[in-house]
Length: 137
Image (cartoon, rainbow, N blue to C red; front, side, top):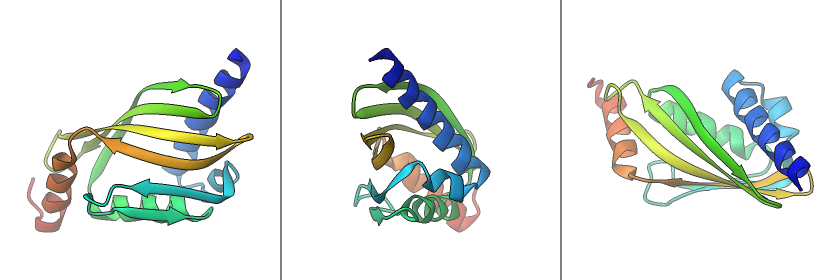
């Protein structure tokens, strides 16, 4: 069991590294054909992003709406078919603000079939979107 958990942790870390580097071909190899990510309807980018290209579409939409200066991974906990990563999105505007997120990953076999982020305080996301829209620091 520990080997599978270690493998899940490595796979999630690899996915973060690949998406951060913009290596979408390699990132999509980590996903099932029917992959989907769901963002809550109350967020500016809420909705379902489906298929191997869904993660890229979500990433590009989120990054186009907010000035994300950094992504800080705090911890990842893995089970048999699920893992949760605690991550902070650090915004350039408003300077130094963060969105604290728990991202749930679901696996089918050795591939990720679902990602579902949970935001502690969606108001920080709305503030970052507004700051980028208006150019306020």
